[in-house]
Amino acid sequence: MSRSTRDAAAVPPGDDDDDDLTIRIQALRHTYASGVEAVAGVDLDIPPGQKLAIVGQNGAGKTTLVRHLNGMVRPTAGSVRIGDWSTAEKSIAELSHRVGYVFQNPDEQIFARTVAADVAFGPKNLGFDEHRTADSVAAALEAVGLAHEAGAHPHHLSLSERKRVAIAAVLAMQTPIVVLDEPTTGQDDAGVRLISTIIERLTAAGTTVIAITHDMDFCVENFDRVVVMTRGTVRADGPAREVFAREDALEHAAVEPPQLIRLATALGWGETPTDPVSFVDALERHRRGSSGGR
Ligand SMILES: Nc1ncnc2c1ncn2[C@@H]1O[C@H](COP(=O)(O)OP(=O)(O)O)[C@@H](O)[C@H]1O
Ligand SMILES: [Mg+2]
Image 1: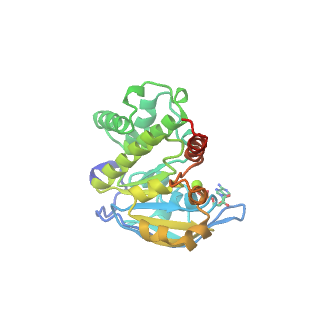
Image 2: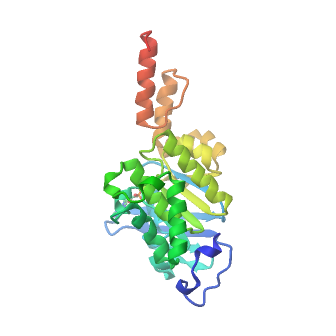
Image 3: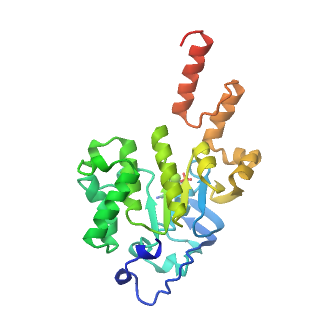
């Protein structure tokens, strides 16, 4: 799958197009013009096909780190390699052959007048012919459960649907690496399950999936490896169950959902709501439960 995503004509000549698209981040630092050092020395190797989650509190540098992969952010120091490419030497257009990045906020990503046109933009730009573009768009919309909205104006969809349009737009590009920036935000349980299925299918096909998430249940259920970031650095890195056993690291990272989980635990609810909505739901259920009614 990964090889077929790259249109030979659009890949610059002289590229040794080998199949090993290991991501190699070395001594990476990024300081914004404002003076904020968002990434403060990160080393990370991500082998092809891995399912990696990045967690950590807001401002920890997660988005800045992953935006190096598609060239939206450039290293201030250190390097990011994707297979035989150094991202510093590649344009965003070139990097889009290897890395698809789904924005946290779909409204920063979606711009076309119809869902189908938006999802078709990436594959067309990668040089897919009309037939392949149409097939890829149809499959991507099917995967996110929005085939019936192909002709809709994105602004007429809900935020959770627009988020899934943004995911479809990247799926349609069939890149060997997919980066999802907080994909489950605003999704209900069905939406989260759908995204889990997409991730499973992607990795079954050999795609590397990297997701930033605040949803620890989603994280535990879908990812082999978890990286905890604090203040622009990697605080913990390992298999999900190992990392989640490290309360010190999680506490230090002030990952938000575990605070709710801790509160729910302290209240003796016997369940672990991972976002404010499910927390409020649980609170209401427990209130009803304790007042005897239903
Ligand atoms: N475009 C930007 N310009 C200046 N500072 C930024 C920009 N984007 C993020 N930052 C700052 O960089 C730090 C890391 O942000 P970010 O990478 O978005 O973290 P996270 O995704 O973990 O919330 C924060 O202090 C944030 O305010
Ligand atoms: Mg972010």
